[in-house]
Length: 125
Image: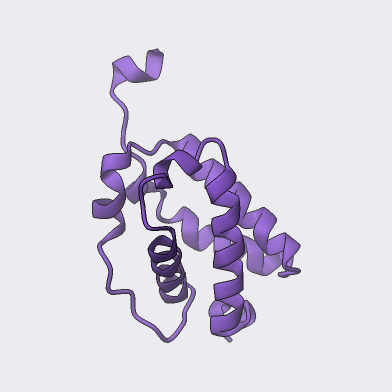
């Protein structure tokens, strides 16, 4: 059984993404990244991508993660905040701890693609 199936298939992933998106929208560090974007479109893309990486039947056909996020200048602190919200959301939806950690692990693999390396001068500032 895939992680997608254990999370409840399309309905389960959709519910998780919608709840996660609400949390992102009010998070002080993450919400500014989405201020000028079409909220419904972002939720749909987020759901499509998660279905694909969690073993669902749909294939993600949107822009690549690096291309769609590189201009944002995301740091490790942003990914950490996002993963905290993922854990909280799935926990509140009564997802098993093992499935939560497997979901987080699948998302964690995206960190090198999403985080923009900072120069030495930025790191010391």
